[in-house]
Length: 380
Length: 163
Image 1 (cartoon, chains in turn yellow, brown):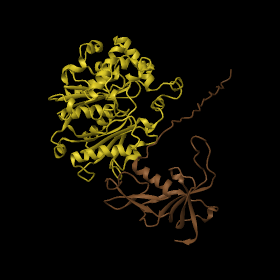
Image 2 (cartoon, rainbow over the protein chains, first blue to last red):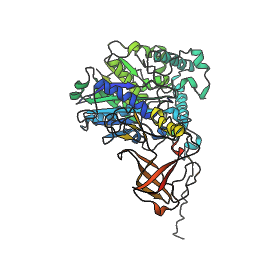
Image 3 (cartoon, rainbow over the protein chains, first blue to last red):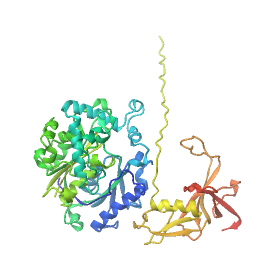
Image 4 (cartoon, chains in turn yellow, blue):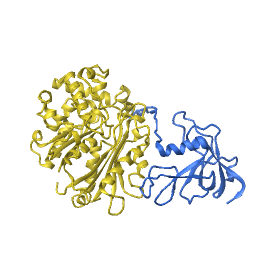
């Protein structure tokens, strides 16, 4: 990248199964207050010039879901644009806003209250077309189950291996103050959870979660005013796969491979297996950790099974945050991955800190079975 | 042979979308609703920086972007700033039924506010020809209240009072 964009501050709420005491505006205010305190920024002429917000109309149960948050994101009489996709896509958009010269300092926020709807599956059901796939009853869970079956058949990865990933995720989540599901589980407890959509058990899927994230992004020139620990975005890439699941190879990583190639070309990364000090993957479902590790190229192509057996996730510091499977709402999976990468590169990751971390990759996904993939590379 | 082409029937698929929701009100909107229900009081919050009222009360002053912690009780009387007479009403999404038309919606500047806290509600009148800007009106609270803005039935004209 010719010009560099810095992430100058991040804040996350504690992710919880139902924040009954807060409106989504209240969740946002909590994290916006934090990033403003971290940077000393306000919304004056030389402060935050615009907001990029991430939210979903159906989850918020209102058309134009960003309209109700202009007060808190400082966009009353100001500039705001919304991304109705995973928050990693919001990071991409905020960086593009800066690189294009529209703004020097941007507030990026994301929020979602999955607990607000009686069932999040009713929400994601509406992502499908009303004629062909909705009548069959597809939602993101059943789409992920098709993906899990396809990937497990191809890779030979077993339910036991997935259970061990959940056990591992809980161990790391216990060291992350923002994480939701921190109670330790044994392999047997994970395997005893009831089947939700075969082969996905209740314990193999991310929990219903509420929360918000905020970040401040700025040009290289301005970043030094707000932080002495800027984290640089050095690579960005995204790619959409087909809308209809039947047109896709659900066992593979068509979109993620292309998104990663674009980000790696930008960041001049030759070998992703050795390039990163840590890797953050949006594992909404347990099988997606090895599947997306293949797509990112952090393990050999089709090598996910062997990589798990060889201790790849520990060796390559994958999801020290606990991962999405320990609790982030939809919309925030990839954004929470970027937030963790930033905390690690700033040396602020506490008991889960990767010593001397210099470069990280974070991945986010939007749509059924990871239809749209976003890859973000950050360095310090 | 006929050149007449049989017209294609264009099928329309009728569906009802409905997802039951539980909206958290939070401490700010929550207090506003609780005061309506328990005390028949209209509470606006007041920006500690610019002093303007906000109705409905919100966590943050939209203009100053600072947290709003102060509250003011507003009187249940005011002046109609603007109104709208509805002849074609939106149906209730679940019942499909509409309110009896015509009905009147209005913005009311409650007494003591500086045009910064208009209250939006129904103006219940027996004769819509009486409706005009500047009418003096009073809030009518409902007998049974549940913590929604329907705890107010609407505004009523204060007969004989001119602004």
